[in-house]
Image (cartoon, rainbow, N blue to C red; front, side, top):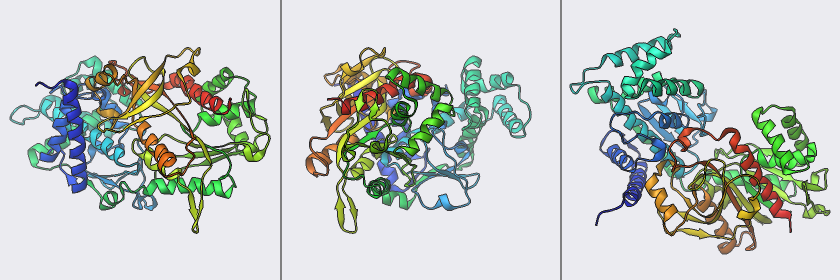
Length: 556
């Protein structure tokens, strides 16, 4: 019986993950060798939407290349050897960390050939970077093939690109249009497409120019093919030893609980919110400090701050908040997840937000623990550790957790960027793990605000960069009736349900609130994550979800 494209795609994802686990356990591999070829073939079969023209044998994918380069350290295209490491002390060395624009992690360039990349966010982080690197190697092979004839003789376009990169490095002026014309032949793209991509890369201060990136990717592929100078990806022994053992999650959670204990807040009603590190702060303190009287006023203040982060309102809110209950906990653990604690008992106003009164008794006033977005499997590691009692000198201090709220970005399958999704269950892709739950938030809570709102099951995927239209259409149109996809929902649910129903670390009556805003629609051409960030379109949905979480928690 002939398999459908969705079945072939799911099989390709499974092969990718099995191969990645094997290579990771082995310790090293050559991406263009036999082992790496297995990853390449599986990714080519899958042909994810985010990587655009990946499966085209000649065309180099440009939007996907920018997406990947902003998530990898600057200069990685020049390195023959890439080593994935744990946090192993390089942060105290003389080496200057390189931090990618869109994926906060410390990376270190040892010399011209070697790049070290810290992996502290769990297996999802490793799978994500290996997928991106595999994409780069596929594109580098295309560049090499487009720059030479079947006998290996280099074309005039390649020699011209080499000269252009030399001039660029020397600081000489380039005729961008002429340079783009030469480059377009190597990319097998139109002049118009190439020039637009050159301008996009120029805007990004965290990557080299498109000319330099294409040249160095092609140069390494050329040297590998003609001189046997193999590229290699390896994994440090410490990384392989630590993965899966919650090393960083435990450090992160203990710092939060230590602060709560020190401030005498462990026994107070605690509400955990996984969100960004600005919307809860600005929503609560725009009302407290600037007397905002409605969601609309809070939204106007948030928009002004988002347009120009150093506005007077932003400074006033921050300074006021630090005097009245706000504690900032920047990450020191390696998780790259910052946290905040908000003690409402120290607030001046008797209302939390417009229309929501705080209890008169100090001991009943809620405490908020706000954590930044986790990444994939890291959500389970951090939440599992946070919900455990805090042990000090043999004494266990349980947390009085009343609610857990998750606000996230997700890919939507109905609607478009900026619309909202209210999940009723999380379906874990590639496993039999499904997590139905009672969501305190409902579709009706978001009506009348001019945004599309969808309610139903959501898919927790193994990687957003590994989804194609066939898989997503299957989840949307089959009896699963999925409304969107994201990477953390099932991991949070696994931790919450284990803590409440099995371990007894938190009350079984714990309230759960989930809502997502759409960062992209992977089923629409031009609306994938590679098409760019939400920008200002994300302000309203972000603050609306935040406002509704706070309103729902304390409105009877």
